[in-house]
Image 1 (spheres, rainbow, N blue to C red):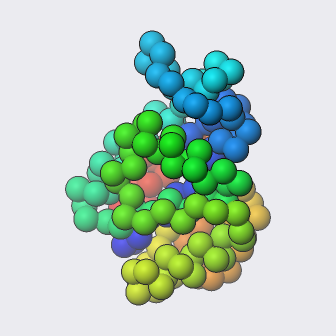
Image 2 (cartoon, rainbow, N blue to C red; image 1 turned 90 degrees about the vertical axis):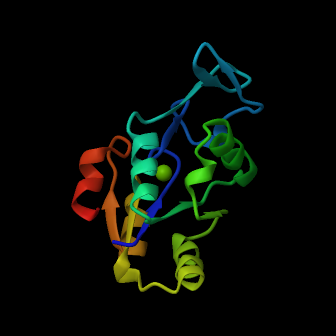
Length: 151
Ligand SMILES: [Mg+2]
């Protein structure tokens, strides 16, 4: 696969037990934990940074595709976690993810069959899979084992 597309909420991170658009910015680091202003802990899943580094080392394209209602907050979190640097493209806005993938396809000019997509919601897996993208359901955050068949 040439293009690796990741959902954000419950795929790369757990935003205090909810979606990032239910958090309360601003975010601050305290004792190694990223907290929102209510003290809820927003955490990356354990393998995320290693996975993103590995994909970039292999010259893969890495894309974020989120339908959050608070794109600015998602962008803040990417920055606070210092993982913004790994993404070649970010498509972050509310909409069916069909729109996100049309824009990804238009940007890279790569067929859907060369893309793999990880997401924790069946509706997104179903819609995007219908385009011909390899869509992989994520149960408890992304991990190395899930990536392995596609690298
Ligand atoms: Mg999600």
